[in-house]
Every structure is written in structure tokens, then in C-alpha cells.
Image (cartoon, rainbow, N blue to C red; front, side, top):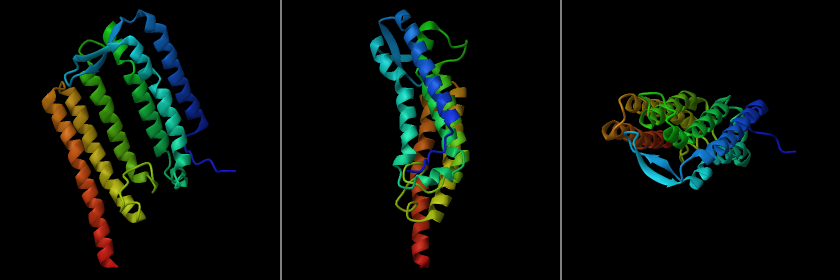
Length: 225
């Protein structure tokens, strides 16, 4: 019998499944009250700049269930799936954060149509702040991720050497935290192209820095052989 390598507890899976199902049912309950065309995209300032027939929103409403199913099977498909068990509760925390975030984002059309968001709170604030929190949380946990093929910062050099993996995840964790802070700041400062541009720049520029660090470690290891 194949060993279960998924570190997420059954209680957590059932709770997340219940959340996704309740969210989907609630979407179906309010669906008849939606106008024929609903907002589906917002600009960096939180203003609606994209619309679609409400039937299309149903595809978004089932996304949390699809994502949850994918997160359920990923560890068992990884040749190094046992590493998930040795990474503590990192994957469980990631699964909870991503599932809750996506489920919350599916309600943006209804929140916009029915005016559910509190005064002064817009998608330009809500989305980047929530995304930033996820980045910060993941950045704190990344150094605990053990070497595997699907979760974490994967390069040819991190997969070749466990020490390279460990150090690169630590640097990547700092990158994620800084990116998260940038997105939170962008949201709290009212969004806008400038602040979102800064946040995205931080996110993008951190990639070559992290990859370069991983490569430099590999080169140093090779030279020491």
C-alpha cells in the first residue's frame, strides 16, 4: 500500500471542503439576484474595468474546489513526496491560505454589485493586502520546506544539492516577505499604478536575484570539489 505523503490533516481537508461547498451553494443562492452582466475585472485603483455575462461567474465560483482537489493530489504525484511530511505544517498552512484567499476572491463580483464592502474599502485595498499577507506568511515558512520537485523554489541547482536547496529557500523567503510588504503597502496607500508598479517590480526583480544566488552557490560548490 502506498504511503500517504500528504501532511494536511483530514480535519483540515474536510473543513476546507466544507468551506468551498458552502461558498459554492451561497453563490448559487444569490445567483438569481445578480444582473445579467457582472464585474469580472478591476484596475489597480479598484475600479471595475471588465464585465461579463453572469453565467461566466459560475466557472470562477467552482475554482476553489478545483484548486483544493489539485492541492490534495500534488504531494502524491511528487517523486519526493515524503519531503512534504518532513516539512512540518508548511504545506497545510499554504493550502489553507490559498484556498481561503481564492474562495474570498470569488465573492468580489457580488460584493461589488450589492455594495457589501465597508465604506472606504475597495478591491484596490482588499486584494493586494490579502495577497501580501499570503506572501509574508509563505516567506516565513519557506526555510522549512524540504527538497522536492513541486513545492518551493526549484532550480537545477537546488534540486542537485540539499544544502543549495536549504539556503535558496531562505533567501527566497526574504524575497517573499519583502514582496508581501510591498503589496500590503500598495493596498494601504490606495493602490494606483505607481504603488502597484513598485510592488510588481519588487516581485519580478527578486526572481533573478534568487536564481543568481542559487547558481552562485552551485558554482562555489563545484569549484571546491
